[in-house]
Length: 264
Image (cartoon, rainbow, N blue to C red; front, side, top):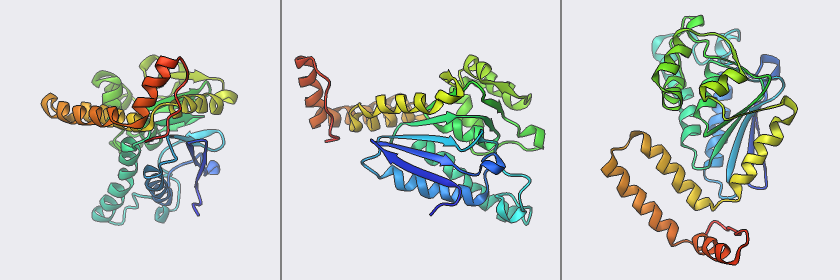
């Protein structure tokens, strides 16, 4: 049973909620462990087609809990070797989220800073409440950044925008986040859950094998040379073509009806 990470599954959508509202969902080392366990359980769950990540209370996640007891943090100052080992394990959580076979949605309900922003950046989609506030925050704390936030945002926003956000950190609201391309949609705070699950429901109606294959294509496209990329793209396309879902999609198109995909 997770103490600070809640996961519920309904109609193919897994909602993962950071539940440490008293600390504005600041990330302890235990929370990283719980998130890692949760993501591992979901990545192999055939019934889960989409994952929504959000925060309990008024914040999404304000990053590492710098005010917590040192024994609860990833970086404790006990030794360079121990801090490095813990942070590398914690960083794997962001990589897990980025590589999840299912589409992922960050529903940003409030403050989103530091490692919390890095987690949001690892998701495929980001929807923000109009009350959300963002900040990279690392440099303000005398730190260089973790959880691959710079890697994710460089690919999402480009190098110049990412330099601006990390080298000249400052708070900015949802409108600025949308202007930068950090979030794709802004909704009233009381409509965030509905908006995130409307997108999730839309994604669950797609052929799950094709969705997972397409997500792998999108991941590979960022780092793989064209010739190597084409090899795997062709393999995935052919495998998808031979699925029952592809046959169902063709039949539904001809019959002018909505397809009923089974993941076969």
